[in-house]
Image (cartoon, rainbow, N blue to C red; front, side, top):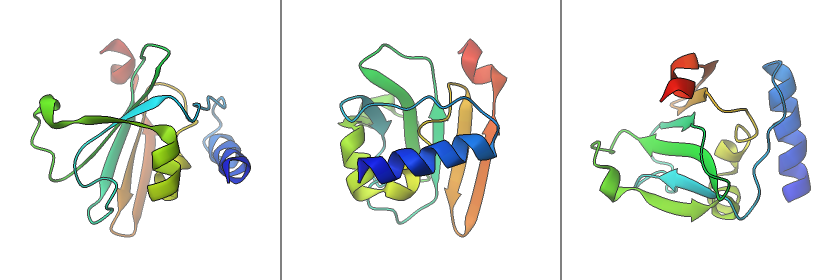
Length: 115
């Protein structure tokens, strides 16, 4: 399964003409409640982070801004529960995506690198 994810991630990075920056299965991803269930659109952003963190923060519309409600989960759980999100997770720091409701929007946000 991981081999398939890496292949699709490489294709994603090539599509956006970006460096392939994969994360490991053990690295942590920050998620809000509801993301793994997949009922609402998901917003993702990748910040520069310590090595044990992937840098990815994933939230949905139910996130109220309270960072204490966020959870850290291993990337392996994202692959298991939401492989549709895992596709984007080799994009470099500074990338954002919005996925859901038959929409896909992916872009680089230089402001993220300054946060």
